[in-house]
Each structure stands twice: as C-alpha cells, then as structure tokens.
Length: 135
Image (cartoon, rainbow, N blue to C red; front, side, top):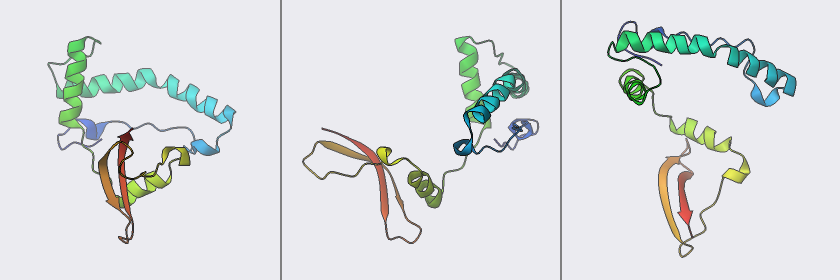
C-alpha cells in the first residue's frame, strides 16, 4: 500500500513472516506452522488497520456494522493505490496457471464468447486473450 498523505498506508507495518513464502515447497508441517503463525497475527493486524483508518477517517469507527464496512471500503478507495500489471507480468501469471484453467477458443458457432482482456508477448509474436464463453 502506498499513499501520498503522511501517516496513512505508507506507514502500514507489513507482515514479517518467520519463513520464506515458498508455499509450493512446504511440507504439511511447515504449512501448518505458517498457518498457526498467521492466525496468531490477526489481532495485531486488525489493531493496525483500526489505527490507520481512524487516523485517516475520524468519522469512521470499525465496529462491524454495515456503516463501518462502507466506511472501510471508502478508506481503501481513497488511500490504497495499486499499479496495473505489465504485459510481461500478466503473461507470467497466465503461464503459471495450471493447465486445467487454461482453455482454447473453440471457434465461431459454438455459443457466445467474449473477451475481457488482451496482452501480447514481449516480442509481439503472440496475443493472449482472457474471457469466457457459454454454449
């Protein structure tokens, strides 16, 4: 998270996990250990979130009411910024997907199809299209 306003998400204390996050290489015991550590951090993380929101939005009290959740949503919209993925990052993400999640276009006449996103390979030799279809 980043913000240009002093004292807001730029001052958010990030998690410091006790181990490298190599999830795919973990044994069941390592995954359980990480999970237990993660759960032990929840109260601290919620306290940190309360601190940030209440500094940025004095009208917002996080008490799990619908109004406080709406206020929390407004806080994230106002305070948290992200950057778009580069085409290279998008392709890396797609290439990392399991094969069962990657489908091929089956041509016209097979139902309704739509595109949601398009990216090209870095050298421009391939086009990647995300979307869906319905028969």
